[in-house]
Length: 77
Image: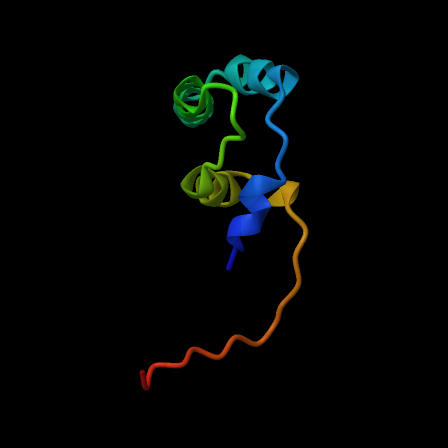
């Protein structure tokens, strides 16, 4: 589980963008385009791209730190 607040704290700098483009894989170019498109639509406001962080985790789990925790899901209501 990746909390939504994670995607609000990940700084996507121009340096990170350049590194992603330099990788040149279809996934890295797609991720870079996701950030470009979201940033263009944000008009200078902070960009929250929750789904892209999940994709990035699947692609490069080594970039994340985590721990195993118990999660209870309430389904009665």
